Image 1: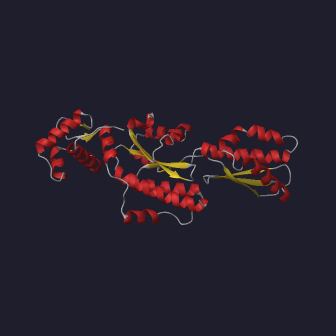
Image 2 (image 1 turned 180 degrees about the vertical axis):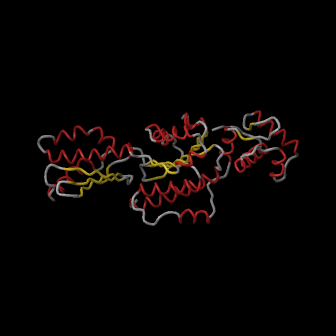
Image 3 (image 1 turned 180 degrees about the horizontal axis):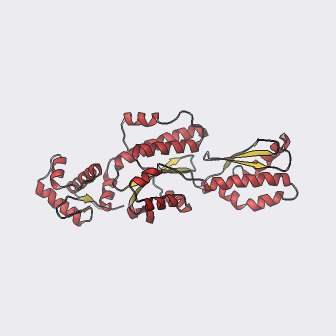
Length: 340
């Protein structure tokens, strides 16, 4: 964040230039600023202020005879001082109508929310459930599929669900199925996902040899657990990334999103809304992009995150307003699904 106390007039001129450039993508001259401002100072005063803003590094001049465009630092000043978050009731109604009425699990809610957000912002949108360290197993279910086949269903505190089908060398009776549920729930329920992963070998070995039947169930349970820990990130609107990025850089960004580093990055900020501009993120692949992160609450102890990736020349007021509202909808839907 840039901590700088600009004069009101200077700030007003900078804000008008950024807003105009966001709208048109064309350099903004002093004549345009004069026409945009109410109770505008003289044209010569505006030119002097624009020269000062350029000298301070908040505006750039692409060509000698051209107008000015905002620098990354100029965008930072703009974002820190703009009024955002409000969208019209008509826009809210339109966004709400885009959601399906038959979403029954958190992942479907998040995926649809991010797909909608991608459509209405023309950006790439990523969701991440609460970090593994903040999640625990809420329930484990076993379902008989065939004579020798069963399916395990793991449900986490954040509502993430993972299925795993496995085969046995023995017939799965109702008694065996109940034994699976009793023993696995006893070890898994209310246990942190990280702790369970760390204790996998210890738990499996405790059933090895003496109870080979239960060992089979636990191996399948840990296989499902491993998938929950790995398959965390969802990406919607990938094609948008290729519209405002070079192809090679777009693939680099997608690869980074699917890495463990991205999970650390997206939860690094403690603030509700965090806007990273260019090098703010300290992530090389985002050095020429804007990344806006907002948390969504799952419970008092855990939060997930939704991230909007776009060009630095982005309509921040519009994008953040829509992101705010979509997160509001997500939280209400998750609360209903998870009975919070």
